[in-house]
Length: 75
Image 1 (cartoon, rainbow, N blue to C red):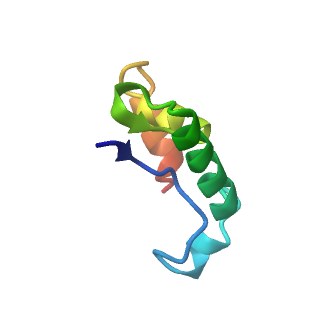
Image 2 (image 1 turned 90 degrees about the vertical axis):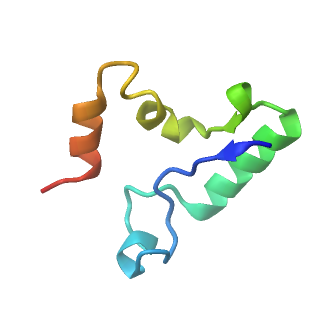
């Protein structure tokens, strides 16, 4: 079993704003990278983690949780 935790991706999941948000990863790029990782069997710790999402994934470990959270949730 593999864990797939997607980053913020350009989809209409939460509405048109997300689908058009330049901060979100383009859906086609996300799918292509995930498929490449699956084909290469690159999934340490049984996680499929795209490059763009590594900073978020390791924010707490690296002492950047507050800054990462603030960047993802602007007031």
